[in-house]
View (cartoon, protein in one colour):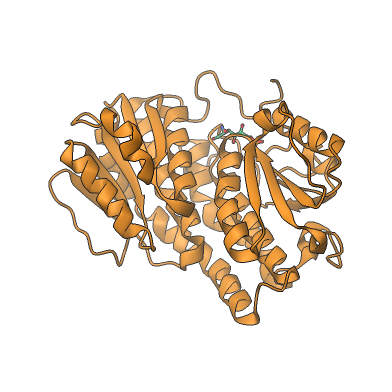
Length: 365
Ligand code: M6R
Protein backbone atom coordinates (compact mmCIF):
# COMPACT_ATOMS: atom_id res chain seq x y z
CA UNK A 1 0.00 0.00 0.00
CA UNK A 2 2.90 2.31 0.80
CA UNK A 3 4.77 1.57 -2.41
CA UNK A 4 8.19 3.21 -2.33
CA UNK A 5 7.31 5.33 0.73
CA UNK A 6 8.02 4.82 4.42
CA UNK A 7 4.95 6.54 5.80
CA UNK A 8 1.48 7.44 4.64
CA UNK A 9 2.21 11.08 5.35
CA UNK A 10 5.20 10.97 3.02
CA UNK A 11 3.14 9.19 0.36
CA UNK A 12 0.31 11.69 0.73
CA UNK A 13 2.64 14.68 0.52
CA UNK A 14 4.03 13.30 -2.72
CA UNK A 15 0.58 12.46 -4.08
CA UNK A 16 -0.37 16.12 -4.09
CA UNK A 17 0.31 16.86 -7.77
CA UNK A 18 -2.07 14.05 -8.70
CA UNK A 19 -4.65 14.84 -6.00
CA UNK A 20 -4.68 18.45 -7.18
CA UNK A 21 -4.86 17.52 -10.87
CA UNK A 22 -7.78 15.16 -10.16
CA UNK A 23 -9.62 17.86 -8.20
CA UNK A 24 -8.90 20.53 -10.80
CA UNK A 25 -9.95 18.34 -13.72
CA UNK A 26 -13.66 18.96 -13.26
CA UNK A 27 -13.05 22.71 -12.91
CA UNK A 28 -11.07 22.88 -16.14
CA UNK A 29 -13.85 20.98 -17.90
CA UNK A 30 -16.71 23.18 -16.70
CA UNK A 31 -15.06 26.50 -15.86
CA UNK A 32 -16.18 28.31 -12.70
CA UNK A 33 -19.68 26.90 -12.77
CA UNK A 34 -22.16 26.59 -9.88
CA UNK A 35 -22.90 23.09 -11.22
CA UNK A 36 -19.57 22.01 -9.69
CA UNK A 37 -21.22 22.50 -6.31
CA UNK A 38 -24.54 20.87 -7.25
CA UNK A 39 -26.33 24.15 -7.99
CA UNK A 40 -27.09 23.44 -11.65
CA UNK A 41 -28.29 26.87 -12.80
CA UNK A 42 -26.75 28.96 -10.04
CA UNK A 43 -30.12 29.76 -8.53
CA UNK A 44 -28.89 29.24 -4.95
CA UNK A 45 -25.35 30.61 -5.11
CA UNK A 46 -26.47 33.74 -6.97
CA UNK A 47 -28.44 34.80 -3.89
CA UNK A 48 -25.44 34.70 -1.59
CA UNK A 49 -24.58 38.01 0.13
CA UNK A 50 -21.78 36.72 2.33
CA UNK A 51 -20.00 33.58 3.47
CA UNK A 52 -19.60 32.03 6.91
CA UNK A 53 -16.99 29.26 7.01
CA UNK A 54 -16.99 26.66 9.80
CA UNK A 55 -14.29 24.02 10.29
CA UNK A 56 -11.68 22.56 12.67
CA UNK A 57 -7.91 22.15 12.60
CA UNK A 58 -6.27 22.13 9.21
CA UNK A 59 -9.65 22.55 7.52
CA UNK A 60 -10.09 25.76 9.53
CA UNK A 61 -6.78 27.02 8.14
CA UNK A 62 -7.97 26.25 4.61
CA UNK A 63 -11.03 28.36 5.42
CA UNK A 64 -8.77 31.11 6.75
CA UNK A 65 -6.99 31.30 3.36
CA UNK A 66 -10.35 31.29 1.60
CA UNK A 67 -11.50 34.39 3.45
CA UNK A 68 -8.86 36.41 1.59
CA UNK A 69 -9.90 34.94 -1.77
CA UNK A 70 -13.63 35.33 -1.23
CA UNK A 71 -13.27 38.96 -0.19
CA UNK A 72 -10.72 39.92 -2.85
CA UNK A 73 -12.08 37.94 -5.80
CA UNK A 74 -15.83 37.66 -5.14
CA UNK A 75 -16.02 40.93 -3.14
CA UNK A 76 -18.28 39.24 -0.61
CA UNK A 77 -17.84 39.55 3.15
CA UNK A 78 -16.52 36.34 4.67
CA UNK A 79 -16.00 35.22 8.24
CA UNK A 80 -14.25 32.05 9.35
CA UNK A 81 -14.85 30.45 12.71
CA UNK A 82 -13.69 27.37 14.56
CA UNK A 83 -16.70 25.06 14.58
CA UNK A 84 -16.44 24.24 18.29
CA UNK A 85 -16.64 27.95 19.13
CA UNK A 86 -19.47 28.81 16.76
CA UNK A 87 -21.73 26.00 17.94
CA UNK A 88 -21.80 27.27 21.52
CA UNK A 89 -22.22 31.00 21.07
CA UNK A 90 -25.25 33.11 20.40
CA UNK A 91 -24.51 33.92 16.79
CA UNK A 92 -26.54 36.47 14.83
CA UNK A 93 -27.70 34.66 11.71
CA UNK A 94 -28.03 36.24 8.30
CA UNK A 95 -29.89 33.72 6.11
CA UNK A 96 -28.42 35.40 3.01
CA UNK A 97 -25.03 34.09 4.06
CA UNK A 98 -23.78 30.80 2.67
CA UNK A 99 -22.60 28.39 5.37
CA UNK A 100 -19.50 26.60 4.14
CA UNK A 101 -18.25 23.65 6.17
CA UNK A 102 -14.85 22.18 5.37
CA UNK A 103 -14.02 18.67 6.52
CA UNK A 104 -11.72 16.03 5.09
CA UNK A 105 -13.54 13.18 6.82
CA UNK A 106 -17.04 14.62 6.72
CA UNK A 107 -17.55 13.13 10.19
CA UNK A 108 -16.01 15.71 12.55
CA UNK A 109 -18.55 16.12 15.32
CA UNK A 110 -17.91 19.79 16.08
CA UNK A 111 -18.25 20.75 12.41
CA UNK A 112 -21.43 18.70 12.05
CA UNK A 113 -22.94 20.28 15.16
CA UNK A 114 -21.94 23.77 14.03
CA UNK A 115 -23.76 23.13 10.74
CA UNK A 116 -26.87 21.93 12.57
CA UNK A 117 -26.74 24.97 14.83
CA UNK A 118 -26.47 27.30 11.81
CA UNK A 119 -29.44 25.54 10.26
CA UNK A 120 -31.42 25.97 13.48
CA UNK A 121 -30.72 29.72 13.25
CA UNK A 122 -32.34 29.85 9.81
CA UNK A 123 -29.38 29.22 7.51
CA UNK A 124 -30.94 27.22 4.66
CA UNK A 125 -28.02 27.54 2.33
CA UNK A 126 -25.13 25.24 3.19
CA UNK A 127 -22.21 23.93 1.20
CA UNK A 128 -19.88 21.14 2.26
CA UNK A 129 -16.32 20.78 1.01
CA UNK A 130 -15.42 17.22 1.80
CA UNK A 131 -13.08 14.42 0.76
CA UNK A 132 -15.25 11.43 1.74
CA UNK A 133 -18.32 10.74 -0.36
CA UNK A 134 -21.66 10.35 1.39
CA UNK A 135 -20.22 11.10 4.82
CA UNK A 136 -22.39 12.82 7.44
CA UNK A 137 -21.59 16.49 6.75
CA UNK A 138 -22.16 16.49 2.96
CA UNK A 139 -25.33 14.48 3.53
CA UNK A 140 -26.63 17.21 5.82
CA UNK A 141 -25.68 20.00 3.37
CA UNK A 142 -27.62 21.44 0.46
CA UNK A 143 -24.59 21.76 -1.84
CA UNK A 144 -21.34 19.82 -1.95
CA UNK A 145 -17.94 19.86 -3.60
CA UNK A 146 -15.94 16.66 -3.23
CA UNK A 147 -12.18 17.04 -3.28
CA UNK A 148 -10.54 14.17 -5.11
CA UNK A 149 -7.54 13.67 -2.87
CA UNK A 150 -8.18 9.95 -2.42
CA UNK A 151 -8.02 8.28 0.99
CA UNK A 152 -5.92 10.23 3.49
CA UNK A 153 -4.56 7.86 6.15
CA UNK A 154 -1.88 9.88 7.95
CA UNK A 155 -3.31 11.73 10.95
CA UNK A 156 -1.58 14.90 9.79
CA UNK A 157 -3.63 16.29 6.93
CA UNK A 158 -1.66 17.19 3.80
CA UNK A 159 -3.25 16.46 0.43
CA UNK A 160 -6.71 17.08 1.85
CA UNK A 161 -5.59 20.62 2.77
CA UNK A 162 -4.23 21.60 -0.62
CA UNK A 163 -7.22 20.14 -2.46
CA UNK A 164 -9.58 21.97 -0.08
CA UNK A 165 -7.78 25.15 -1.09
CA UNK A 166 -8.47 24.39 -4.76
CA UNK A 167 -12.15 23.84 -3.94
CA UNK A 168 -12.31 27.12 -2.03
CA UNK A 169 -10.52 29.08 -4.73
CA UNK A 170 -13.02 27.63 -7.21
CA UNK A 171 -15.85 28.72 -4.92
CA UNK A 172 -14.46 32.27 -4.70
CA UNK A 173 -14.15 32.50 -8.50
CA UNK A 174 -17.62 30.99 -9.03
CA UNK A 175 -19.26 33.44 -6.62
CA UNK A 176 -17.36 36.24 -8.35
CA UNK A 177 -18.63 35.12 -11.74
CA UNK A 178 -22.22 34.85 -10.56
CA UNK A 179 -21.95 38.30 -9.01
CA UNK A 180 -20.56 39.87 -12.18
CA UNK A 181 -17.17 40.46 -10.54
CA UNK A 182 -15.10 38.23 -12.82
CA UNK A 183 -14.39 39.31 -16.37
CA UNK A 184 -13.42 36.76 -18.96
CA UNK A 185 -9.73 37.76 -18.81
CA UNK A 186 -9.60 37.16 -15.08
CA UNK A 187 -11.48 33.89 -15.47
CA UNK A 188 -8.98 32.69 -18.06
CA UNK A 189 -6.11 33.81 -15.82
CA UNK A 190 -7.50 31.93 -12.80
CA UNK A 191 -8.16 28.79 -14.83
CA UNK A 192 -4.64 28.97 -16.15
CA UNK A 193 -3.31 29.30 -12.61
CA UNK A 194 -5.18 26.10 -11.70
CA UNK A 195 -3.90 24.32 -14.80
CA UNK A 196 -0.29 25.10 -13.83
CA UNK A 197 -0.67 24.26 -10.16
CA UNK A 198 0.13 20.50 -10.16
CA UNK A 199 3.38 21.16 -12.03
CA UNK A 200 4.39 23.96 -9.66
CA UNK A 201 3.63 21.74 -6.67
CA UNK A 202 5.86 19.05 -8.16
CA UNK A 203 8.66 21.62 -8.32
CA UNK A 204 8.03 22.53 -4.69
CA UNK A 205 8.32 18.84 -3.74
CA UNK A 206 11.71 18.82 -5.41
CA UNK A 207 12.92 21.15 -2.61
CA UNK A 208 12.99 18.14 -0.28
CA UNK A 209 16.79 17.65 -0.32
CA UNK A 210 17.23 21.30 0.71
CA UNK A 211 14.71 20.97 3.53
CA UNK A 212 16.28 17.90 5.17
CA UNK A 213 19.28 19.79 6.63
CA UNK A 214 16.85 22.33 8.10
CA UNK A 215 14.96 19.46 9.75
CA UNK A 216 18.19 18.27 11.40
CA UNK A 217 18.61 21.70 12.95
CA UNK A 218 14.98 21.74 14.11
CA UNK A 219 14.90 18.32 15.73
CA UNK A 220 16.75 19.27 18.96
CA UNK A 221 14.64 22.43 19.44
CA UNK A 222 11.85 22.78 21.97
CA UNK A 223 10.09 25.75 20.43
CA UNK A 224 9.60 27.36 17.03
CA UNK A 225 7.82 30.42 15.69
CA UNK A 226 6.14 30.60 12.28
CA UNK A 227 5.45 33.96 10.69
CA UNK A 228 3.38 34.97 7.69
CA UNK A 229 1.26 37.90 6.56
CA UNK A 230 -1.97 38.25 4.63
CA UNK A 231 -3.13 35.18 2.75
CA UNK A 232 0.06 33.40 3.85
CA UNK A 233 -0.58 33.88 7.55
CA UNK A 234 -2.83 30.77 7.63
CA UNK A 235 0.00 28.84 5.94
CA UNK A 236 2.23 29.79 8.88
CA UNK A 237 -0.52 28.47 11.20
CA UNK A 238 -0.77 25.25 9.20
CA UNK A 239 3.01 24.82 9.27
CA UNK A 240 3.08 25.27 13.05
CA UNK A 241 0.24 22.76 13.48
CA UNK A 242 2.05 20.17 11.35
CA UNK A 243 5.22 20.58 13.42
CA UNK A 244 3.32 20.33 16.73
CA UNK A 245 1.32 17.28 15.69
CA UNK A 246 4.08 15.02 14.49
CA UNK A 247 7.26 16.26 16.23
CA UNK A 248 5.78 17.45 19.56
CA UNK A 249 7.90 20.60 19.25
CA UNK A 250 5.97 23.57 20.58
CA UNK A 251 5.30 25.78 17.59
CA UNK A 252 3.29 28.97 17.38
CA UNK A 253 2.27 30.99 14.37
CA UNK A 254 1.86 34.74 14.35
CA UNK A 255 0.85 37.26 11.80
CA UNK A 256 4.30 38.84 11.39
CA UNK A 257 2.99 42.32 12.18
CA UNK A 258 1.98 41.10 15.64
CA UNK A 259 5.54 40.18 16.56
CA UNK A 260 6.36 43.36 18.35
CA UNK A 261 3.09 43.27 20.27
CA UNK A 262 4.34 40.44 22.43
CA UNK A 263 5.95 37.32 20.94
CA UNK A 264 9.20 39.14 20.12
CA UNK A 265 9.97 38.73 23.83
CA UNK A 266 10.38 34.97 23.18
CA UNK A 267 13.07 35.40 20.54
CA UNK A 268 16.67 34.56 21.37
CA UNK A 269 19.42 32.37 19.86
CA UNK A 270 17.50 29.22 20.76
CA UNK A 271 14.39 30.20 18.83
CA UNK A 272 14.13 29.14 15.18
CA UNK A 273 11.74 31.35 13.24
CA UNK A 274 10.18 30.07 10.03
CA UNK A 275 9.04 32.83 7.71
CA UNK A 276 6.66 32.43 4.78
CA UNK A 277 7.95 35.27 2.61
CA UNK A 278 6.57 35.17 -0.93
CA UNK A 279 7.35 37.98 -3.29
CA UNK A 280 4.06 39.83 -2.86
CA UNK A 281 3.01 43.33 -1.83
CA UNK A 282 3.76 42.55 1.83
CA UNK A 283 7.34 41.37 1.30
CA UNK A 284 8.96 44.63 2.46
CA UNK A 285 6.89 44.49 5.66
CA UNK A 286 7.92 40.87 6.21
CA UNK A 287 11.57 41.81 5.70
CA UNK A 288 11.40 44.39 8.46
CA UNK A 289 9.78 41.79 10.73
CA UNK A 290 12.70 39.50 9.92
CA UNK A 291 15.15 42.20 10.96
CA UNK A 292 13.36 42.47 14.30
CA UNK A 293 13.99 38.74 14.82
CA UNK A 294 17.60 38.85 13.67
CA UNK A 295 18.38 41.80 15.95
CA UNK A 296 17.41 39.58 18.92
CA UNK A 297 19.59 36.70 17.75
CA UNK A 298 16.74 34.55 16.40
CA UNK A 299 17.67 32.19 13.58
CA UNK A 300 15.58 32.68 10.44
CA UNK A 301 14.42 29.90 8.10
CA UNK A 302 12.83 31.68 5.17
CA UNK A 303 10.67 30.28 2.39
CA UNK A 304 11.03 32.89 -0.33
CA UNK A 305 10.16 33.05 -4.01
CA UNK A 306 12.64 32.40 -6.79
CA UNK A 307 12.73 36.03 -7.87
CA UNK A 308 13.12 37.62 -4.41
CA UNK A 309 16.24 39.65 -3.91
CA UNK A 310 17.38 38.61 -0.52
CA UNK A 311 20.13 36.21 0.11
CA UNK A 312 21.51 34.06 2.87
CA UNK A 313 23.54 35.67 5.59
CA UNK A 314 24.63 34.78 9.06
CA UNK A 315 21.61 33.30 10.84
CA UNK A 316 19.38 33.70 7.78
CA UNK A 317 18.69 30.54 5.76
CA UNK A 318 16.68 30.81 2.57
CA UNK A 319 14.91 28.22 0.43
CA UNK A 320 13.29 29.49 -2.74
CA UNK A 321 10.01 28.10 -3.99
CA UNK A 322 9.71 27.70 -7.77
CA UNK A 323 8.03 30.07 -10.17
CA UNK A 324 4.24 29.97 -9.96
CA UNK A 325 1.07 31.88 -10.64
CA UNK A 326 0.70 34.37 -7.79
CA UNK A 327 -2.90 33.99 -6.73
CA UNK A 328 -2.44 30.33 -5.72
CA UNK A 329 0.81 31.02 -3.87
CA UNK A 330 -0.54 29.82 -0.47
CA UNK A 331 -1.09 26.33 -1.93
CA UNK A 332 2.48 26.20 -3.12
CA UNK A 333 3.89 27.46 0.17
CA UNK A 334 2.03 24.74 2.07
CA UNK A 335 4.35 22.11 0.58
CA UNK A 336 7.70 23.08 2.17
CA UNK A 337 6.18 23.45 5.66
CA UNK A 338 4.73 19.94 5.35
CA UNK A 339 8.14 18.60 4.32
CA UNK A 340 9.88 20.44 7.17
CA UNK A 341 7.54 18.87 9.74
CA UNK A 342 7.85 15.43 8.17
CA UNK A 343 11.65 15.40 8.09
CA UNK A 344 11.92 16.86 11.59
CA UNK A 345 9.71 14.01 12.82
CA UNK A 346 11.97 11.51 11.06
CA UNK A 347 15.03 13.08 12.68
CA UNK A 348 13.30 12.83 16.07
CA UNK A 349 12.00 9.32 15.49
CA UNK A 350 8.38 10.09 16.39
CA UNK A 351 5.44 8.11 15.02
CA UNK A 352 4.68 10.15 11.91
CA UNK A 353 1.42 8.56 10.86
CA UNK A 354 -0.05 8.03 14.32
CA UNK A 355 1.09 10.84 16.58
CA UNK A 356 0.38 10.39 20.27
CA UNK A 357 -3.01 11.46 21.66
CA UNK A 358 -4.56 12.16 18.23
CA UNK A 359 -7.16 10.43 16.06
CA UNK A 360 -7.66 10.82 12.32
CA UNK A 361 -11.33 11.56 12.62
CA UNK A 362 -12.58 13.41 15.69
CA UNK A 363 -16.12 12.16 16.19
CA UNK A 364 -16.27 13.02 19.89
CA UNK A 365 -16.26 16.32 21.69
O1 M6R B 1 -11.83 15.67 8.90
P1 M6R B 1 -11.71 17.13 9.23
O2 M6R B 1 -11.16 17.94 8.11
O3 M6R B 1 -13.05 17.70 9.70
O4 M6R B 1 -10.73 17.19 10.45
C1 M6R B 1 -10.46 18.41 11.10
C2 M6R B 1 -9.25 18.30 12.00
O5 M6R B 1 -9.48 17.34 13.02
C3 M6R B 1 -7.98 17.92 11.24
O6 M6R B 1 -7.72 18.80 10.19
C4 M6R B 1 -6.78 17.89 12.18
O7 M6R B 1 -6.49 19.18 12.64
C5 M6R B 1 -5.57 17.27 11.47
N1 M6R B 1 -4.97 16.27 12.33
C6 M6R B 1 -4.55 18.27 11.05
O8 M6R B 1 -3.41 17.69 10.51
